[in-house]
Length: 89
Image: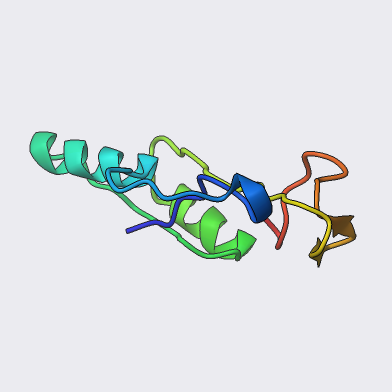
């Protein structure tokens, strides 16, 4: 259902064969107890606002990537400059 970021690039990479993303765990529990889930798995803030507007409760997940200095994303050369979300998160 939803991607989950568990590591970044460089020496901090790895694999998690048994990882369950938080949104997936919520969806599984919701199907057991009959709760309706509305999702928006995009970088679009308007799509997220639309999904939240259909719900009694909203839970928002964003990812924060970082790594070693060979990649620059939104002015962050490797390690993050701050905790601001990337890609309109």
